[in-house]
Image 1 (tube, rainbow over the protein chains, first blue to last red):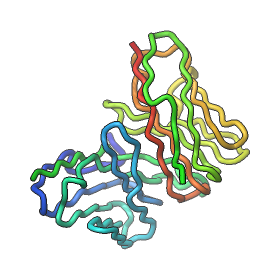
Image 2 (image 1 turned 90 degrees about the horizontal axis):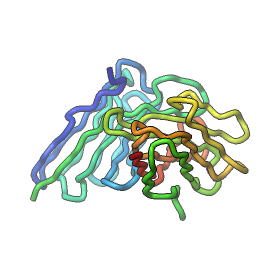
Image 3 (image 1 turned 60 degrees about the vertical axis):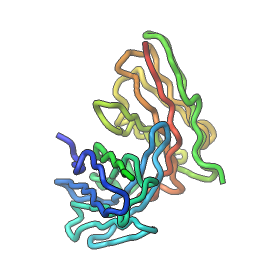
Image 4 (image 1 turned 135 degrees about the vertical axis):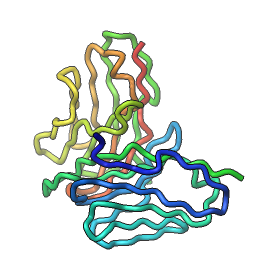
Length: 114
Length: 114
């Protein structure tokens, strides 16, 4: 089974609509990263969350990490075609005190229609 | 400034051949990571380098896979006797420090084994 579950797997929204993507783990998340990927490109870093209850925003994207640090959500307000792509959550699920060996979710494919 | 670069961007090889994939991390970044992204497995950690420490090879799928990082900068991932199941996108990332520090990804190398 996947250690990091993302939902939904795919999403089609009309331009201007809001949407939420979830990332859930059965283990504590010691660092939670959200990335966006477009076909043929690498991962573009969006946000990093570390503390339980933490919330960060950048432009129209807001990410939250719940108090128990086992679930994160990514919320996009007033979606635009430029938001289309695959959203991946990655996390430290084994605390080592050194490097971050990230485990990734399976991704959420977002399409934004006009 | 320059991001993480990888070469080649695409590589097609025949089963049984050896391949070398190159990664140039962001200048000054001490940590370097290799991941593999395939349709069936998603994004998986392969190996991690931090400074002069011994690399963490725990994600390498078999002894046909090896990696080096020369002079604390450029890294090469080598796959010997390639198999069709090695076909995937190989992504490299680097971070300034170890620990919970943001990993910045390169565009990847798409490997196809015929």
